[in-house]
Amino acid sequence: MKILFLDQSGKPGGAELCLIDIAKPYSDRALVGLFADGDFKTLLQQHKIPVEVLAKQPIKVQKQSNLFQILASFIQLVPLLIKVTKIARKYDLIYANTQKALVIGALASFLAHRPLVYHLHDILSLEHFSSINLRVAVTLANIFASLVITNSQASQTAFVQAGGKAELTEIVYNGFDSKKYQISDVEIQKLQQKLELQDKFVIGHFSRLAPWKGQHILIAALAQCPPQVTAILVGDALFGEQDYVQELHQQVAKLGLENRVKFLGFRADIPQLMSACNLVTHTSTAPEPFGRVIVEAMLCGTPIVAAKAGGAMELVEHGVNGFLTTPGEPQELAKVINTCLEDIEITATIADNARNMARQRFEIATINQQIAQLLFSGKIDLSNTEVVDFEDAQD
Ligand code: UDP
Ligand code: GLC
Image 1 (tube, rainbow, N blue to C red):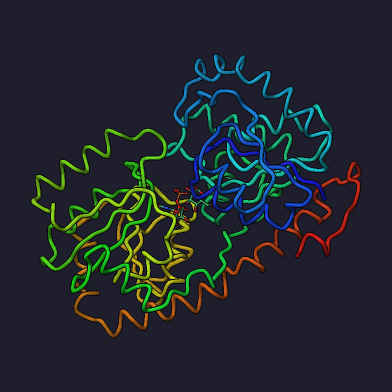
Image 2 (cartoon, rainbow, N blue to C red):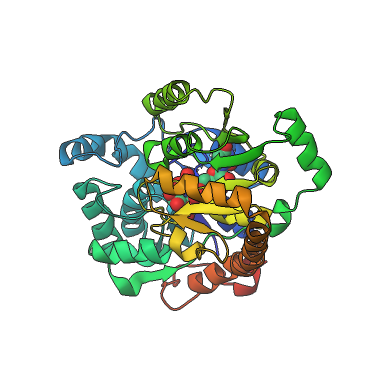
């Protein structure tokens, strides 16, 4: 099956990293069309997945855009739509991986007579989107999509609550290659030395720097922990959140934590860094749609404490394979950090449970098989396809 994947971003966020794994089995007969240039394109090329930047300028609509801003951007979308429609005719299926990709993908699917799959990586609620954005996404998905793959039960529920048709949806979690998360002790020690983290209790936070990812919650919690507790903040402001970055630095200075917080920026060695941590924290203040970082920490065998909302609650069972704390509550987080510091053995058992569970639930080969089964299921009208080879797609 020849698939045209569409994604609006040039930057490697979680939805984009997930797409790399999904597109890979189809790479000899697929194209990833991006609406912006950037490091994501380079990553796709490194994975030998055909990629083309289809838009000359990034689309200006934001998650919180109003009706006027959306209409104004429509003119900008026309050349892109024409281009995508033309390309779509050479493919059997359009697979939209983000909201703007859904808008273009839906219209192109109509014009080119190709079925549309929408992979929903977001919780479609007013906490994350403007109401007009929500309505556009749900309406287009309802009318044009043959299948809506949601990255968690939480994303599925929000889609239906926003008016989305439940019968279109299927939940598929992100998949991971667990081998990539097995890091040798030698490698871990080298990295700890390089970052001057030996003899410290290291907490890692692995998210892009954005207010709702809640790095400020970790910094506030750190102030309530003993001095050997140190934090590394891994990730960059991918979508222009420079004010928040400044606020974080100011907060660190105000609390006198300069020697205990390191900003490492965007890194490609996540498994190594997570393995070098004693604990990984996830502190999103709004419900996390899925939370790749939670599963990645589990696969590294590093204990995880996550914010109790959204998809995170489908991944973590408190006290069994990790810890959950109320979103936006630094005091509660500090308490869990201090427990992990003291009850080393119990925490190690919990991390072991998590690793075993994550290997069983999220192995990429199984997840890709689930997706292939859905793509070849009766839900999608493939009467325009050239070759339908289910075995091929599972490779
Ligand atoms: N990540 C990365 N480098 C960084 C910070 C994060 O590669 O410096 C990766 C991280 O390992 C995870 C993804 O970015 O796979 C973030 O996905 P998640 O689902 O946690 O959150 P999102 O940013 O997509 O909302
Ligand atoms: C989005 C979500 C994140 C999820 C990722 C992959 O970026 O914010 O929670 O893990 O997509 O599905």
